[in-house]
Image (cartoon, rainbow, N blue to C red; front, side, top):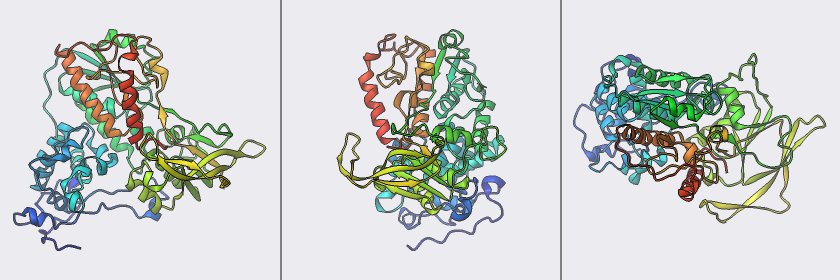
Length: 528
């Protein structure tokens, strides 16, 4: 432990993020850069591992006022803030942290909300360690500033004090925009466009808005009331949301184009990829998509639910991304005595966030690494009894840059289980794209766009996973924010004509395929 400056006494009482008590800087004297370097990173308080493994309450508990003010003092306020370059939505990180540091919570909240439509979400699920925090200059000689934890603190304060963080209503542009999909890309684009004065309607296929934020990410990582409050804030700003609306079935894309001046497609890439091994159709095999959607969105954790899930005593989840970790930790909370991850590469190659892997290990999750599935086994009634696997060794790096797994002859073994959850990635769902023949797609079925995010259809833009392939929440949000700027420019007549022609998927298919492949490689959602 390094020597640290002595902080000023805390204000005490309930957390100021909820209570609104007076904010006092952490120190009662100006702190020099040299002193700042001696302040250790504040640890995020969290639930005890044994207790949380049996409940769905949020694992990370959030900073107290005192911890937040102390952590804010660690920011060096660099003249060249490279942390901003690491943020896909370009949050002005030094500005909101400095305002927090001096106790200006209204200013901190205003700055953060101006840059980020969903800060309560990103403060919880964004992989800051490989983005803004990964760029932080403090990481070169120790620990980076806990940017994500500070973002969460300020965002939660703003949510608890909505009357103090309202933006002025913009002048109406008289133009209308349809946003198809209410996931992170769609909600971000909607929030940005309504600030420009446009009339924005979001169309969501499910009965609730939020997309992957509500059906894909478990309660213990992202509480659903937090997502709902973020959605409510957008609605209060003027965004309209229509649920149970499937574009491609309820409405056609052509109808959307006739009704609105511009359209933004943000339907994600939610079609599950399976293992392609014998026995995948046996009873007790789920895709992670179905499993998590039933639990998160449809309340399947409740035995009285209309759509319950199986609750095996021994559950195996195949994959190594965040979706796999979410699935196996969910199974543990649903009562699995043995909850196991099967991943064909090693721990260093796990695509999931290191924090989530660490939490899973604390909760008693078993990791079978460098192991690949060969066959799902079942009894005479076709109920799962096990997963036949083979051990792998790691060879030379493959096209993804990771070591290629190679089967070890004679190393086959069986993991006994009653349930198998497949979490090895997703791909584009053709429900919408197949309904519009003039919408250019690449060979993988993703929408082709030009440099401004416009598709081959004039005035129809696209972003997020339906363009780049399965990726993270924050990358989709970055796509949504950039697309919103392009849509706004299009509506004002300032965007140059698209370089794509209707149906001419080959125009930029190679470039988009390369982008999608790169995204899939870096994706923490994929389990390969």
